[in-house]
Image (cartoon, rainbow, N blue to C red):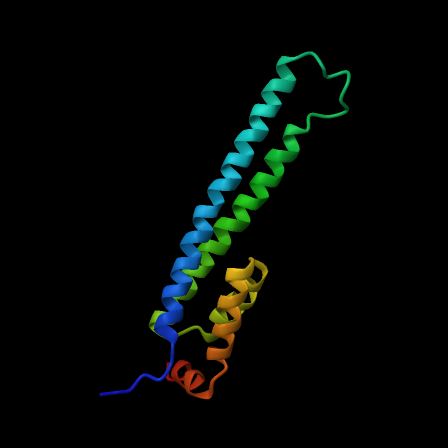
Length: 131
């Protein structure tokens, strides 16, 4: 029986949770975009186009679209990293996603720092080199 002295399975579960939370957070951007459409309709229904230089509802829609794409992409990439941790392959991809997760708030920073420490251990690197 082989003794596993690494925490890859724990990090796999944490990456799954982080990926699912990131995908759920994308609902915020959908609501933000809907708010932009509401503002567009309110401004266009009233005849105040002479008073404002542009319809600011478009700012909400553009920010929501960019945020939604980034959030969904990061969520999918984080779920892929969890899959690769389970399969113990694609070391560089997991390492890169851990670094990208540093940009996503305190949960991402904690997950990234601890997973980078774990990935830097020689015995864990040896597991990935067995491919």
